[in-house]
Image 1 (spheres, helix red, strand yellow):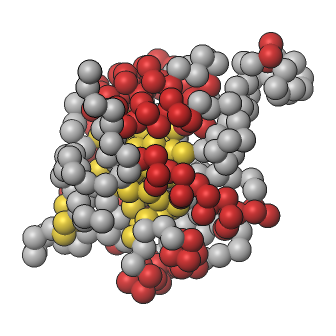
Image 2: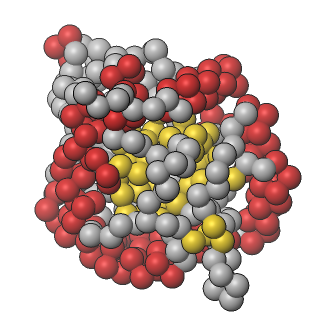
Length: 320
């Protein structure tokens, strides 16, 4: 696989210098999200597991001993060194980190605390020579305008820090973020007007991103050239069958329900999804992120890798 990442010139610190777009002939980077191993393995152990399963990349999602939802990161230099040694031993690279910090908090004191969390996280990414951060818009869906203001305020403070470390940023709209629809989220990302900030299309959130429509091709096409990252897992449509796929009590509770299942265990149209990704010449990170099936984790991850590799190594359809 061609290495689309190159190191910084001597004298410019550690880490990778990231081009604005991966070269046209570069391969999609298929990464393992090791969430199902967090409870039993260190990050070094997860890198070894990824190698055993056949993955070349690992996308590190929140875990309490490294960085956790909305809390100050806890990883120290010794932990970074241990993980870096495992990278060298296995050849599996950390493609991306997935922090979730409340940088869009309408409360200013909280927003400032979350920006502080972000700054430490970016130091950790640089120490790991990890080139990409994938994160969520966060914020409050009941205060969308205040949250959007807070988001752009935080980005004004953080853009220089990302640029100092030569890091790329991909952002998704997660269920219960201040923006929860695909097109709105793409517009928010576009508004930052930076070639190294792009959109993550999270496939298991597709029915929340479309209010149940599940129009995969339209959402992927709308992101277009801003699509830098996809999360790959299946889910059921919470709007299907008059909403009775999920029964949440009390009725009308302000919550969002979805799954991260293996391909085939849900309502996603996978032929359409993979075809749409090929048609936009997707060449970013495709992270396999199945959660909640620890009893069969290894087999699921092997099957997912086989399917994603088969689908995203195929060329787009020839133009008519």
